[in-house]
Image: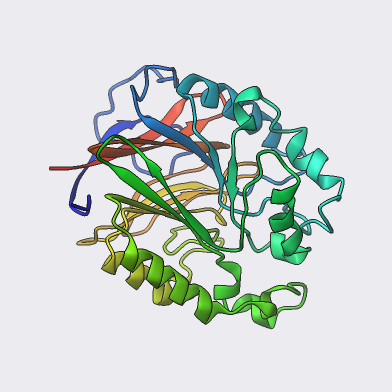
Length: 322
């Protein structure tokens, strides 16, 4: 039976000064919680980072350092990148020096030598996007096997999770009209949407998690909602009972939920540079601080936590079935 009906509740909400989410009327001081090996208990844990490719500038190194510490403490199974892996102009080839300067020599902790399941962002499409796929054949950890792909992992003896990775830049009309995105016009978006429908329709897993670069919904003033994603992707995720859609593109941390909806939207685009955050009627939480996300899967629940560069839990959200 799919975990398609959940109770939503906040586990922890440590709201800092930069947060866009209003504090409670009578706030009670709480100690800052730091991620440790006991934080999530025995669970299937992984890390999500997005918009991180700043060639060691901005907060990328600090985020990378804390990612390594957190991945070690929670025994992270793998890392997911939601795109803009190379922020400036993508990469030129699999031999581009940026692979070393921006990835291999930055995320160097032993715990981050795990598999990195990545998707393409709009900045990746400014370069040789195929090179990011081909790097899979060279790297011991980079795992972008195609522009869109899927796999399944066991969470427990009775529960499995399906992970679905999308190629969102070609789905957005803007990049077909602008110069500087040479590989976008080569893509068959109808084929991708059909693939997504077929994968979702055939999924028997209790947990369905979907990843892409562009938001479906976002409260950010910089980019915000993506109409093409609302039109093309959202109906399929809803129809087939996906639980979460994770993305980057907007450089903040957001949790959004549509009134009456079953899908939670997570924006986690703070792997290098942050921008001011904002809220709208769908905002559950919004915050601007360098960091990443930790997802913890158990047989009866999914917990998503935003983590800062000191290992502090900025916000944590749990949904579980009855």
